[in-house]
Image (cartoon, rainbow, N blue to C red; front, side, top):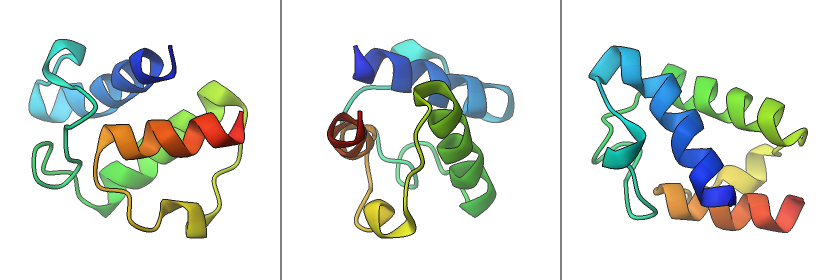
Length: 79
């Protein structure tokens, strides 16, 4: 369930810019390598995730995150 919500959030955030749909995003999708996200894109995605899950993600928790699956794992630990 977390992964499905995340893919929707990421697709919404990146969709307009890159024409990416949720069906093109999976747990192995890389933010930089596959989505070509820049720092503004990533900040927008993180804010949207925090709003959706009503959590606050500390900067330290973001270290080493490269894929959608990495984010899902971190969020599962916060909710």
